[in-house]
Amino acid sequence: MSQLNNVLLVLLLLLSVANGTSAQLSRHHYAKICPNVENIVRDAVKKKFHETFVTVPATIRLFFHDCFVRGCDASVLVASTANNKAEKDHPDNLSLAGDGFDTVIRAKSAVDAVPLCRNKVSCADILTMATRDVISLAGGPYYEVELGRYDGLKSRASDVNGKLPQPGFNLNQLNSLFASNGLTQTDMIALSGAHTVGFSHCNKFNNRIYNFKSHSRVDPTLNEFYATQLKSMCPRNVDPRIAIDMDPTTPRAFDNAYFKNLQKGMGLFTSDQVLFMDPRSKPAVDAFASNSNTFHANFVSAITKLGRVGIKNAQNGNIRSDCSII
Image (cartoon, rainbow, N blue to C red; front, side):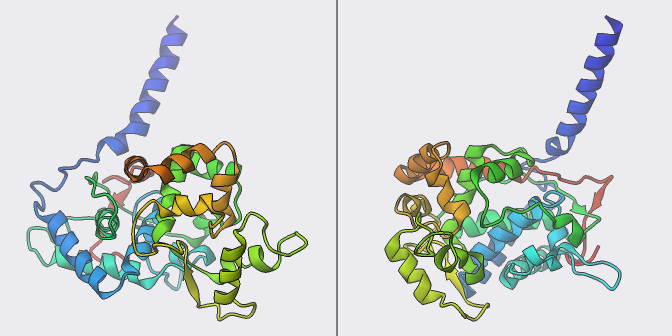
C-alpha cells in the first residue's frame, strides 16, 4: 500500500510541475506592473495594421512558429550571432514576413517608452497580445489573453527540425504534431482556419498543379477552375518571391470562408484540403463552414491552449530588453 501511495505522490508531483507553468498565466498579470499594457500594444499594432494588411498574417504566423518550437517564449524573434544560428534562420522560418517582427518591435518600443512598464513586459506576451489584436482588426474574434510568460534563453535553428506542420502533411501527421503540443484534432482544424488571412509562396504547393502523380499532373482534389487560376498566378518558372492569398474569396477578412473553400476543393495546401477529404475531420470543417460563431469559439479555445505551450518562468526565462537579443 505504501508503494502505491508513493507512486500516487510522484504522479501528483509530476502533474503539479506540468500545470505550474500554465498556472502562472493570468488575464490580470500586468494589472499592477503595467496596467495599460494591452491598450499600448493595441495602439501600436493598429498603426502597423493601417500601413499594411500583411501585418495580420505575418504576426499570426510568427506566433504559431514561436509556440511550436520550444513553446511560446519569443525564441523565434532572436537574431543569429557568429556563434549561434537562431530559429528564425531555419529554412522553415525564412518565409516569415518581416512585418510580423516589426509589429512586435514597435509594440515593445511603445511599452518600454512608459517608465512604469520598461523592461517589465516580455516579448512573448507582446507577441501574444499582438496576435489577438491583428485577428480582431481583421474582423475575427476579440478574446481575453492570458499573460505572464517569460522570454526563452535559447534559440537554435536545429530545434525547428520536425516541429512545424508541412504543406504536404496528411491528417495523421497533422494530428500527431498538434497532439505533441497538447492540441486535439478539433483544435488543429480550428487553428488551420487562420489560413483565411494567410499567403504562400508558389513553391509550397506547385507540386499540386504541375507534378502530381495523376494523368493530368494536377491533384484531382483541387477544384479545376481554382487549379487553372493557380497556374496563371504561379507559372512554372515564377519568381520565388511571388506569394498568393490562401483564401481566394475574402483574403482580408478573418472569417470562415477558408472552410467554405475546402468544401469546394479550394484548399491551397494538401494539408488544407485533407481536412475536408478525410472523413474523420470533415464534420468539423462542415460545422465551421456553416457557422462562423462555432468556428470563432473553437479558434479562441485552441489559440488559448496553444499560448500555454512550453511557457517559461523566472527560473528558465527572463524579460528581454531587446526581443532579438538573449
